[in-house]
Length: 277
Image (cartoon, rainbow, N blue to C red; front, side, top):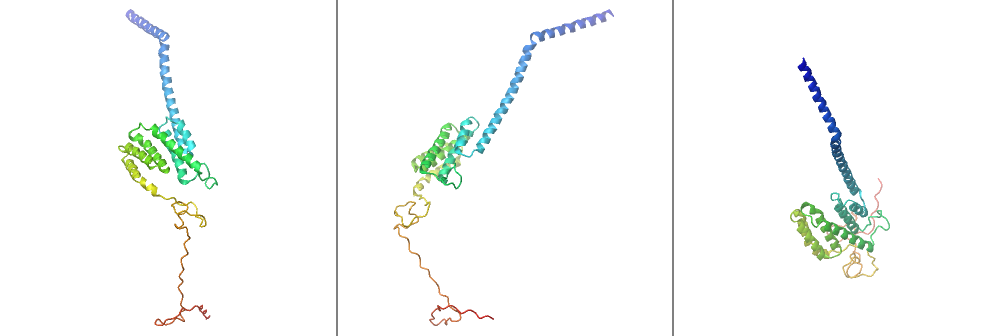
């Protein structure tokens, strides 16, 4: 009985000592470990918040890019999202393409269809062409170090600069850009390299293209024998061609037609109306 009481007392003392040691550890070192655990938890929550915020910003940037309508909007989006995927380069390329489309259609992108001032003036054509070349050159410069699939946008920019040079009637500069596009796309995009080579081979044909007239030619206006949009609808000598004679075949009256072996003269009198029955 005494031994059992001694064991119980000894166990009680041991548990009391353990509790005292644990409480002492909590008082001395517990707050430090608790602070470290809280910092780790807060860091994990902050990382998740930052990832969600970055994803939302990325989705918003793509939505803005897809909804942009004018080159000015695209340029603004490109400047705001320079580090988000390839939005900056894509928006810059689309803005340059929009300027080139306006040049091809002779329509201003900031005017309604059918507006009186929707056509491009010579000053606007020069301005649009220079702005398109600047934007293409920006994409080319930013992607000059890219290789492999990442070089696709640079190849597209070189094609755009070649189109600008062709519009300026500068086949030498256009051939230079096409050679660069061909060399850059040779390994990763052989089909684009072939397109660049075919386009380079067709450059001499550009000098043979004659512009179509935009409005009818006034016959009374002075004409020029050179090939221009003012005389494509007129003969070289400037004379209006005489109208072709109209051949009228006479109609024979079956009631008065002569036999086939006789030289009958076609009747010029109208046929008598049929008698009512």
